[in-house]
Length: 469
Image (cartoon, rainbow, N blue to C red; front, side, top):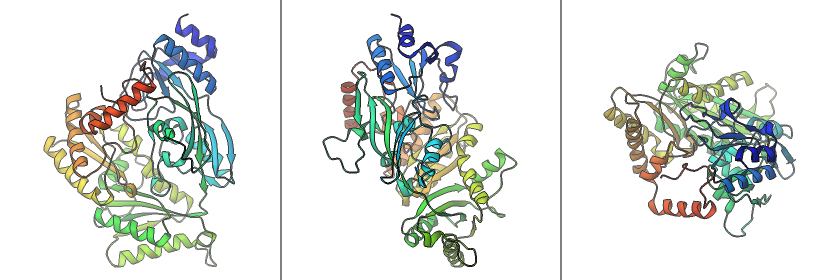
């Protein structure tokens, strides 16, 4: 039987899309990766995912899992392949408030997960700009990070268990609800971050956390980037580690944000080179309940700390949000990064991490070395500074593939010298396979290839991604 006919028999004709109906799966969010799939399928259960994988395996046709399709590295590029959408696996199977966990399917949208947790006065703390379209399967597949990694960890730290369809079509049940489960190899962590190259994640057990009763959110200007680490450590010590977000937006990012939309507002009346967004989440009532004067203790305390740092010159300026509207404005400035950089056209997207005390060194060297390679290149920086993750986006004058690789190599070299990683949270996909070939330990690459060959001997699971050819 023709593979399309077989898929239609397994899923129903309405859930096997071809031609123009499959057009949404022919390009990624950035538009950089284009190519029509053989078809797009929309299974509605784990069992139907298993049927699709078995049919594809028998036919020797590759499968590319697609969650929210919001990635930046071409991980969902599927020309001539079966694009397997997770959109119908969108049920929150169970919320267990007392155990602070949720059991969800891989097609649940991140914002939906936030709303479900909020209904129980809990939070699923993973957050970033694409939360309205990114899905749980995708964030697990790339081990996504975001703005709250500082307090809660990245996606891997937020997952207790998984359900996975293997390349054979077998369903592997790793849906443990345990914090401690030391029963052999940790297969869960093998699949998180594998970008669909080893199997398809169909469900997960996720960790939830108490919802902060109040937030203290501020924009802070510091004399130099190195002073930001002093600010972070001061606030962490003072709050017992309650800093949730610590985001760096230098002057070139603020300028780009203002130029992108005339309605956008500057964080301060004056211009500063080094601007930090900080947010503290208070879960104790004593820090969140307004006093007789109406002041919220955690906000008052943040103001007190910042005032003291302004007096001794460690902070130049600060603005603490006084309302939810002001807090939302601060967050919207940071979360506009993806839209802002995409609107500026073809770019070299880097997503690196370095030790916290070497971020300033990395940026200084990057500015110098990028200019040496291409004096006319433009760049914008934004950073999850609290965990050392820097997004340096470069617009070179040479837009060829060779020019892209040359620019990437400049950045990779600096990162390697500083003991960092060329990939922090965006995954590898197609975009960073060159970096993997150049910078990943050869022994580690060899072991990864052995794992891939063992689990996926026919090479049907998202081939050509992550591992260099």
